[in-house]
Image (cartoon, rainbow, N blue to C red):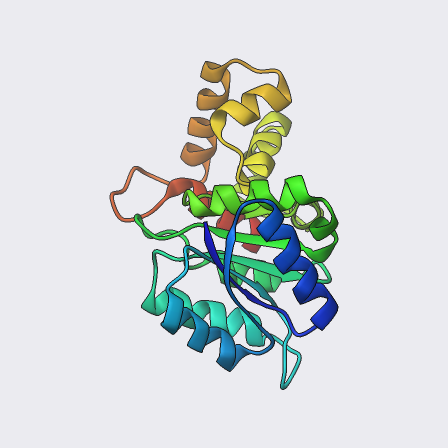
Length: 217
């Protein structure tokens, strides 16, 4: 896997480079700001971009804006955004570009996950394969928001399934986590789509749309 990293903290940036190289990834560039990130992607066209949300000069949402810019020009490149805190708006903005078939994977993780190499590499593998990854704390925070229809109609089990879908889990992984059969998982997901009015479409990924609707409710 070929990766470009954007992180303004020297220590964290070098730590990421070392961790990813140890996991077998090829780090093509490691930069400290939005402009250098965009330039590095232009030069190398990586498989995945790993970027902080807040970078110079404004330390607001430069990394996210760079990710959106990269996404528009190179939709096949996977994007993993790292954040210090749970920021649901940022996560929703990122996922808004994930519903087009053929686009690269997307992920939003808290920086605390960096110290757990297995979680980081697993997330990158999912994103490289075109999947969606959300930090469990983001999922938990979104579920703590007041619910509005059609999400209020979901059963507790359907909410559990949707939460695991938001973390990027496959049907097989959901079945294993919840001790369900594959058929039961498929039945719950089908029910979620029906209750949320997500009909089969060639233009959108219903799993992503379900997660977005749930986060924005």
